[in-house]
Image 1 (cartoon, rainbow over the protein chains, first blue to last red):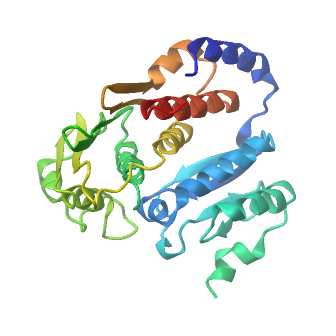
Image 2: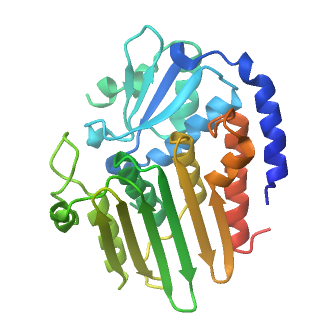
Length: 123
Length: 183
């Protein structure tokens, strides 16, 4: 069982680092649709995979957030990626296995994974 | 939905849309009395009697993108399929409480599934809200309360700091594993 003492130690650690974090305003946003349609199509493991990948790579400027129904239920799980100053990119029918590639190619290196985008899979 | 925990994730989104600040999720698993109950209570804006009376219909929704809302009907059906029951109570301005009771050993009862992951996703996605999670399995009990965590962290350190989220994730995994007599 995790102890609260451990949590208190983490707090001290976090406080010492807080000033080093820059504001997330101009960071990357990864948005996962988490309404009934998304959840039923398997959005939970996709969201978990993004969180894990971002954590593993220690990407400080990337926010993984949840949203409601995006309105394209048949293509769920849907993930939108916003890079600062660029048009958003929408991926559809995303699986946890695709997440590492999206993070590595798109989020880190700025290269859209075209074959996973809704424009490609819906052809 | 293939897991009860996914229904919970879905129903709690309703609480969040209703501007709840405090959300309580209680799960009680009792093999002896052959019952599993899930109760979700929030202090959101609540529903009028009119809306409450039609909310179990798939054609009731507050969203504007289309005219169906399946979260509550799916949850209700999942409970009733197992010989259980579903109740929803709400008061405008006070909040809403949803309770589903399942036949524990019924062949159609969906597994609870990865509830640790669901609780984690709820906290991660809504670090400004308070979640109270109580889970009983037989006589074992696990309580996870973000208010308690906040009281240790103070106001400067948010629940969404990466190191705090890792702690929360492990705390949930360990606590729930212990409920089932795991290591």
